[in-house]
Length: 314
View 1 (cartoon, one colour):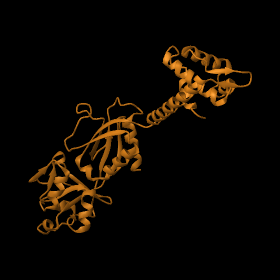
View 2 (spheres, helix red, strand yellow):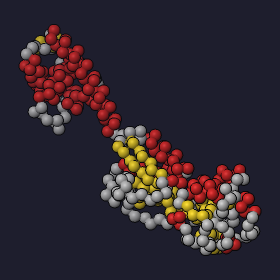
View 3 (cartoon, helix red, strand yellow):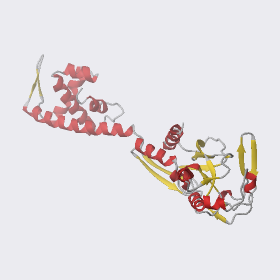
View 4 (cartoon, helix red, strand yellow):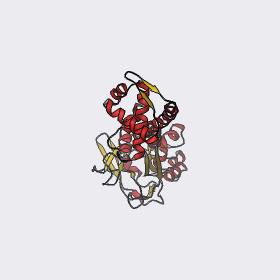
């Protein structure tokens, strides 16, 4: 029914009744509803008030304005000239207020605010970016800052709401959640492989030149094939870098062996620009997980983000 939404708001008991402006708005809204029904009783039934209360509000409005708005008869209400002018203004006011209130209600039901997220730079070329694009499209009132870097950022100290971490190990806790896994591959350029001693299994790679990622250098590389496992202890690397994209670019240029996320190598491997080394042996995948401050709200924006990312990969 016309303007019922506005009337429900104005009649809400939580709004202070001693506020004169709110009182006048209530009176004008009830006045317009009375005219729509052409009776106190019709307006009272829709507004769930008694006819005497409706009549009282209109009398109060008449006293405030100092004019008669209605000629009261037994079965009919007759408009006065002053009422016709007020009715037009009242309906314009109610239309405007109702439109604004509906907009506010829609906004309140839609998450809004700001999220600052840090993530490893290598994920900028992974399915994670597509997931974040979908998240942003679903919640257009959110302002999202994505900080892609291979320098580990702290949540509280660096001012981030959530961190996307990536590693070989994950320990569940109340403030972390596993999101997805990233397959890893051992790759090298075809020209580089042609210059090396042929290999049959991972242990034969011990003396090949490796390119290492700074955070994980000197850690033995563990391979698995069915039930067999091998750990390769590499000789000290000549090239070390702290960026996964640079690591892959160096390997593609023929500088050595490198372990990289599969999504970086798959297109080049299909085109023959890079080759998988000992492809029958598998490396453990990297685990991507979310971390957030322990005191984050239980149903806040961070949990909304984490739930979305988890569902997107399930």
